Amino acid sequence: MIYNERHTLTVINEYVDQFNNHRPHQGRHQRPPNHDPAVITPLNKPVRHRRRLGGVINERHRTA
Image (cartoon, rainbow, N blue to C red; front, side, top):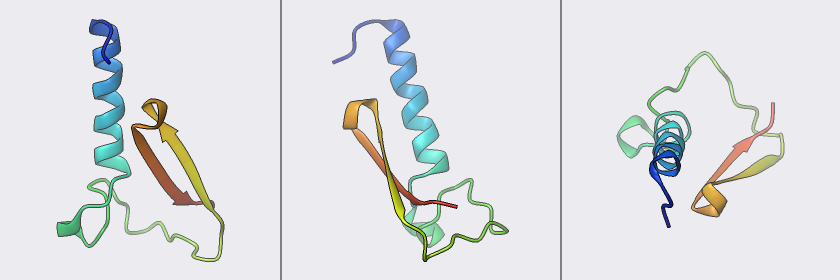
C-alpha cells in the first residue's frame, strides 16, 4: 500500500536500485546491468539475505 508521494518515491527508488544493481538479467548471463566484470565473487563465502521494502524485494549475495 502506498501512503503518499514521498512513500511512492521511496518505493520507486528502491525498485530502480534493485533492478539496476542487484537483479540478474537473463540477456546479460544472469548479471545486473551495472555489473563490474573486474569484481570477482568468492563462491566459498556465505550467502547474505537482505529484505527491501518490507520483504517485497529480496536480495541474496555472497559476502566479501
